[in-house]
Amino acid sequence: MSALNKVILIGNMVEDPEIKQTPSGVAVCNFRIAVKRKYAKEGQQDVDFISIVCWRQAAEYISRYGAKGRNILVCGSLQQRNWTDSDGNKRSTLEVQGDEVSFTDRKPDFTQTETQPTQTSSPAPYTSDINYSEFESDDCPF
Image 1 (tube, rainbow, N blue to C red):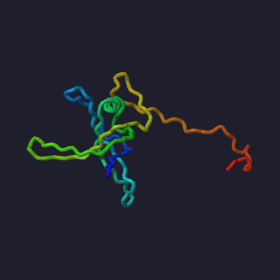
Image 2: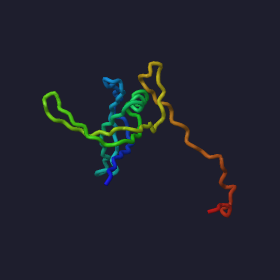
Image 3: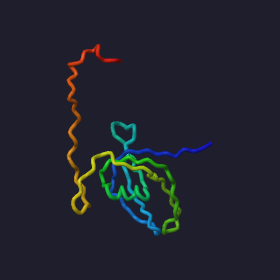
Image 4: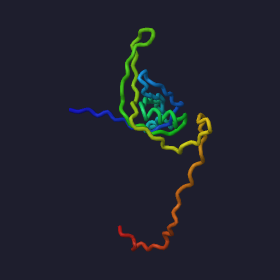
């Protein structure tokens, strides 16, 4: 029997991404997103904070365009990471290995230093130029 490990999340970045490089020069980016739960308790919306790790081009993309508050789509897999802390205690965490990432909000405008994003105005809502009163109900093929 084969196993399936696929995670798809849409949420808001709760912190600016942190990019580092491995000793061999591979880019790795860590950040967390807030994801609303489907069901609310007593009128309150519960939120989960999920740790995301991206590598290589995805890491560079996130570090360049990501910022606290951006809305993001992450596709990847769930992984458990184990380590021993400085006190000798065994530690463990679950995190999403982000393989595909995309921002779902408008790209912010960057200043010349590209450090502080500023939101652009929202696009105008789509309006159709079609005058539907010209069509008779018998014209509709379905």
